[in-house]
Image (cartoon, rainbow, N blue to C red; front, side):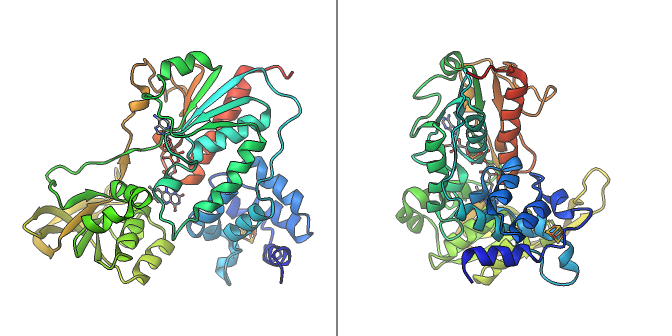
Length: 411
Ligand SMILES: Cc1cc2nc3c(=O)[nH]c(=O)nc-3n(C[C@H](O)[C@H](O)[C@H](O)COP(=O)(O)OP(=O)(O)OC[C@H]3O[C@@H](n4cnc5c(N)ncnc54)[C@H](O)[C@@H]3O)c2cc1C
Ligand code: SF4
């Protein structure tokens, strides 16, 4: 079977359900049954056109969305057999239309700057350029992709897949300046003066610190993953033989698998149970398959002389805490001998990009609004679910907001 036939065969499995549970479960609201119907008929362009209405980063979403807890998890076919492989179809279609984008004939006399070319900034730049705006973009990194390029390890995402998006940006006339840090290479206030509108999607750049843990053998996961991209040799020198990772999200799993591949003995501890973990069942299964132990209902309290002192926890029902409230089990101390402890319990934003300005977020107006009507903020910095698809949706929504608010003239 060639690639076209494979896509048609997979799409033909779709039942075209009346209530469209997959659409409801997709944070972008992609018309999955509609595009499967088009694919069944061999109408690849029609399928792409439907996808383009709600999504513009199929290269990233197809590869890295947690489909098994989103669209595929909701697919009716789960009741009888395997769900439609929606993620694979999305990736297949992205490959088929690799780098394809068309600049509109008419442009809009409105300049727009995107700061940060992670999923939110990319989605915004593409959507704005497709509507005809004159778009410039800057990023502190030497490549697009944000956390996907910088932190997701190569065994989970092939950075070459970013080339398709880079080609699209070029075709759409988006001019990207790399290695450009706003705050160092230009002041945000000056950029706001130069452009008609600005979208800031600077992501989460600092780890959530854990008080009481410090020292040369205590690390934060995003700092270490950064080194994998920039200087892998360092990582090998930094971590000891027995490594404990605290947390059970995507970042924890990626860090554990990266370090296990250096030949270390890796264990994850998590204070809730597997079913409450932010990592998807697939990520957890892949982590376990690499020989990494996962111990749940354990909360680290101290790390001294190579011993991580933990307390056992249990979850009690609490109306204020939907995932249950964590309580310590009295007298339940557990000691784990290890050389290195790595925290992967979440990230925050330094907001250094706003330095020297009066810009503040105005969530009372919209999730993306600031006190300057021409400046918007999107992506992980403001959205609840820290996922690629939600970051993409925020970028597209801001493009629509600007279109509605500016009522720009086509020229
Ligand atoms: C290890 C890891 C694994 C993940 N795995 C998944 C997954 O499997 N599935 C999933 O859906 N999500 C995953 N995520 C989450 C996902 O990567 C984020 O939700 C998403 O990247 C957020 O996009 P963003 O555009 O808001 O920010 P980011 O991707 O963080 O991009 C922000 C960009 O802004 C740039 N920037 C910041 N400050 C400045 C400045 N002052 N000047 C210029 N540029 C600046 C940065 O260089 C960066 O490129 C993972 C995250 C990590 C860290
Ligand atoms: S739930 Fe599954 S079978 Fe039903 S429309 Fe969506 S993809 Fe098709």
